[in-house]
Length: 518
Image 1 (cartoon, rainbow, N blue to C red):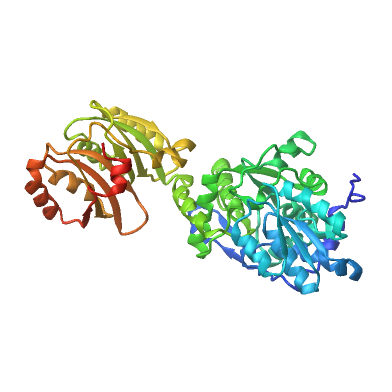
Image 2 (image 1 turned 45 degrees about the horizontal axis):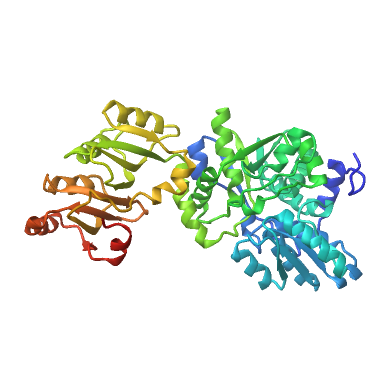
């Protein structure tokens, strides 16, 4: 059907464009590598298309350069402009430098600094405007008209789509055997449009599966509604796919050629980033892990075994500071960690009894990944606990075991408030924490370390504060408040010496006085 881009192009039309696309002046033919660890775990063959290896660490260079390579000398002399969340911007900036053209880049203010610096490093003139791609796009249109520049669209352009389609051409050339499906992240739809056109023209038996964030699923909603839908807002964790409105041409293509759409959440994407790292020792950005997260979800849903899937790792422009969040959420995303609010009687021996129960859970002892507590009630203690798990969906059965042994258990594994905020807020002052001494310990990360601590404690010393989070090191750093009467000072020193764990006493620390001491 006709669009504002002209008569609708067929897969055969796009096949010709893809076969003649000019991308290799600046792009490389990226590797198609087996993800051996992930494949073994899933019981299916997973291949990773390493677009994170491109000079700009993203596939976007292909489409951007192909578009600019088709411009006239006059257009290049006037310069080009684009709106982008970052990766397309780098492609345009590098392509323009290669072609000797001026490049004006409009980016949302939410764009990671890493991408902004990279664009400037390639010689692009950066303008920051708006909170999303769509906001930046409107501003870029105004600048284009005012300065007579040629707009290089990040996705809704046949030449851009053809450039991205060279990825599918490479996949089918690099892998001659069985290929059941290709999983592709969707923002505005340029990548999946190019991939789908090539695959459906050459190997229509291969399924093309589009992947979106569950908070940025404009394409999925549009296809379901049979018209383009504008989202009121988009999530920004996967900034590379944060698009409120997909393109006219990309919507038409995705509606007609994409076999299935899958949405994934933030935790699943964090787990996908970890999966890619384990197999490649490379770190992709959130958008780059969408396809891997979807493969895992697809296998679980369909019970697939022995199939072959390709995942396009579309980018690796990750802000270093974001790695802290990714590591925190990856275990929950893989459901290797379960989170609980446990209610324990505020009485002697209850902590020890709970820890012993953890060591006796079905399936073998679990590592405690998190343990946060602050005394707040004379009868009950509420503890935020993280435990390692062995399979998905196990948290509910663990909660049942706690209940059966008299411990109230609220499963927080999928509670966003708990995961993002509450886990860091367990604490504060307590009028019950008299005679409190505060110590920072270094515990060895091995089973029984906490039980040793509890066993050596004098029975009438009470734990009034406990804060621990596994950070992946050989030793855990733990903050403990103990209610020790002044008369027990010598006994307490003997306890610390017998325990043998390195410690620093923080009872006189001014931060403790301001925020924790009663």
